[in-house]
Length: 74
Image (cartoon, rainbow, N blue to C red; front, top):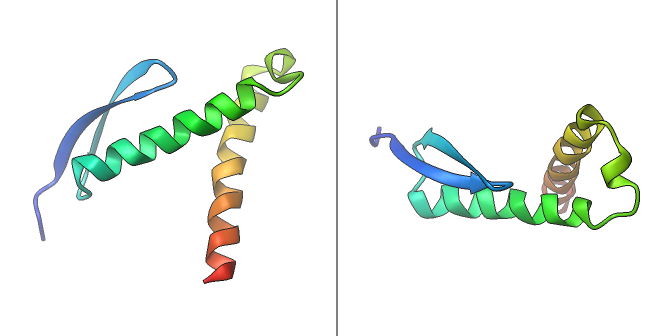
């Protein structure tokens, strides 16, 4: 098994350490994907009026939805 990769990513303007077997480039792409989703939601009307908990749930559901749609296509 390959060694774990330790890298830092920026998500929503904050630095997070990530550790995984994936490459640094892959982990950065994942963070970029999340930043794109966050930006999409921030541009929606009413998003800023939602509670932090509701924002978190919506931001979790959206990538899960993307995942299941891609999985169904494959």
